[in-house]
Amino acid sequence: MLQAIGLTSTPRRDRPPAVDDLTFEARPGAVTALLGSPGAGKTTALRLMLELEPGRGITYFRGRPLHRIAHPPREVGVLLGDIPGHPSRTLRGQLRMLCAATGVPAVRADELTRAVGLAGLERRRIGTLPIGADRRLGLASALLGDPHTLLLDEPCAGLSVAESAWLYELLRAHADEGGTVLYTTEDPKDAARNADRVVTLDRGRLVADQDVAEFARTRLRPRVAVRTPQAARLAAVVTQEARAARRSVEVVAEDGNRLSVYGSDCAAVGDTAFRHGVPIHRLTAETGDTGPVARAPGSEAPRRSDSERHATAPREAPTGEPGGARRPARSPLRPLRYEIHRLMGVPSTPLVVAAVLLGSLALAVLLGRTGHAALPAVLAGWPAISPLPPAALGAGLLGAFSFGEEYRYPALTSGRGAVPRRPGLLLAKLAVAAAVALALGAAVVVADLEVLRFVYGDELIVVPENWPTLCASWLGLLVGCAWAGVLGAGVFRAAAAGVAAVLAVPVAFVPLLQKVLTGPSVRSAAGLPARLREFAGPQWAPAADRWLTGALRVLGQPAGVALSLTLTGLLCAYVFTGLRRKARW
Image 1 (cartoon, one colour):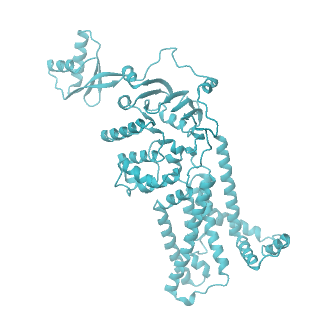
Image 2 (cartoon, one colour; image 1 turned 90 degrees about the vertical axis):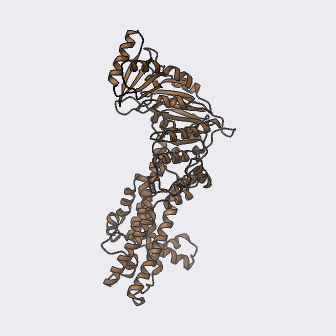
């Protein structure tokens, strides 16, 4: 059972809250419609239930609030507005990525693809799907974790009659299996046809909570829908005859030569039209809306105090007992697999890699032709006028893409924020970014070396003696740029911020550190291994001494120091913003 108690959104400026003290229930085995005109607060109410909107009140899903549910995607399936996702990601790739986020087997994606009628469209891009297939994909995303409760915001918006009928059949089947279904709509006839219970909102307040039979009796009334080219004349004669017969008949003019006649029937309207020679193109009986339920003065539902709310709220079972609250699991439940699916599912990754390889090859050939550049700069494709080589820029750009729209996916709504601060997810992003940077760096060097040998011959390629140190510096630069892109985008929630963090290292920090490190009071890092050996006591192995010396020599360079300081600052900012967001919620 879903129980919403005292939901109240935080008002903006001098405006009233979009949702004000909303309390209702959605029972299992039934479809509940949240009805209201545009702006009534339906979407805000759903966001308050999911803890995505600041405000007061609480929602219990089978006796537990969302933040106390161990696996929220397995309890609540959500469809809010448009289906978020990269438009170039395939339908199958989208669902498999969400499977990794929800912790369910990847075969679940194929099962749901067939269940929602998307078989044969697995390789279609999300951006090319028609609205009917787009809604089916959203429903498949909500059903990935086999949840008990479905929360859907205007699920049939823009769908055809046939598509809407199919969707409501699926929702009915979910309710018949014991699940809870809550969806929003602004059409009273839609609610009367497809819901078991109707909760009506007006300006954020609850005005009615009725079963569908009572709703149809009190909110809806029969009418006669007429289409005629002489709508004004027919309206006049119907009203005139009703007044003569002292009958209560109301005629409402609609768009497109249409009339709605309340208080009469098809036979009476047809006879009137025949007597006055008015042609009729359409004459049918329908069910119309009477408008929002009006409260009598003084009959407004009383506000309940906080003590009354807590008295009626269900108590959670003690931890450790059956059904007791458990510590929520951090989503994505499989962060490494999720991150790999996220990275490889969009065309931007191969495009960036291809651009880096082509740019490095072109720069290597040009630098090798001049004969003045050092071999490491030639192999890296790093001219003196460029702040970073193409490989470092590409690694930073791919890292900056790590934080994107995936945090608006329904499977991650429990994060309650645009960028959830989760150690496992961050480690997965850093590991994947480092692996991509290392592979990109090795590919660039090998490709540039082969091209140089092909163009200029082997006699110009002389391997320097300090090649291990150069390789460590090269790979460390790429990994550092990739991590700076990840952390910068994570802190500021924008890929542009990640790219700016990468460019700030050579443009701003390195020149400043060069002045600082060349000062007379700066001690060299070359003797640091010996000083550490004296401090530690035991004799170090020569190999360990050489490795430590090389690592410190790499880190002691201005670029290494600047990258280390940048990464440390970004990591501290990432942790700080995560703690502040957790305290806010």
